[in-house]
Image (cartoon, rainbow, N blue to C red):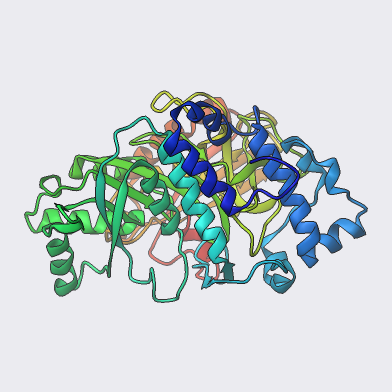
Length: 485
């Protein structure tokens, strides 16, 4: 399997056949699939070296960059050596997308990113072969799973899963759930405000689907964005339909950040296991939780790093920094991305998962988008450097005063000032009921919860915190990121 030639999709097929036919080989493959950067497997190192050879030979953009900077890809033998290579930024991909496309791979799927948190929509290309490689990787993961497999039918809540001929982030969630179970897919247009579509969704939940000659099953897996899952859950409860009475056992969510209390609400309402996946439309790198777990485990399809936002040097595990992802061949062949700057601030860890035993690299904490978090590096050189937009969102999303409807998110903004050497941080929050703009009791409550969530006295002891309530739409619309985590 590992030799002088490229590791291809056919090699994945062979590995899958071996695993299904010979249980003794599971342990060896388990090393390659589950372990990541700090203890890289032979398979992962081989994939990294093959990937760099592949992009140099087939991608004009990387060949030009590496040649111009006199970089030899042969010098990159370990994940830590990736620091020798320049970063790939979103604007590079937007300006030179044709030069990123591999000469050896033909786009089989063309789509667009949503652009909601990363800027304007961007064209995304994927090949049929890399999609097949993704599917096979998750099938291999399924062979390694010790859980008893059951055949299931999954329902996807999305209005545009197929409308643009694209593979949206939900595609990664489908693959993750399929690593735990076998399933057929029902694509369900979703809009709970339309009775006809809601009734159609309920009908799907109540329908037995034929998955083999002698077996019919009800849908037992539900997939969608956190917002779509939450809206359909609340709509069912409002109509006196108990979600836990359905056959749904697994709920997969991806596409946006979800506060912990909303995730618990969904898990409790359906009495099921919730899986939360980090994914990007333009990158094959994914990190998924176990059932109701907190750590998001990376697959072998990518290598994650965290870098300092200012110096761009690699940081150790446990430190806050901007995440960088390197896609591995054959899982991203059409537009490979080496050291892709995600724009997400995270904390990575290699601690063993108490739920599934995973020991590779995981996302321990999602801090927020770079442009939404407040950098306090001038006074904090230790572990905590950023005021987290995700933690702030966690607090504010609990209050109806900041979320007038269930399909909106709190709009807030950080303002930093330094007068006389005293650093002060003000969180400006839009209140959708004017009566609360001068509510001191609410302000004190928010202040207390924000400070507790951020461990403020320990993380930023010399920084004064203030809360300011603003009327609706007071935060300039020229800064749409104000309502994004």
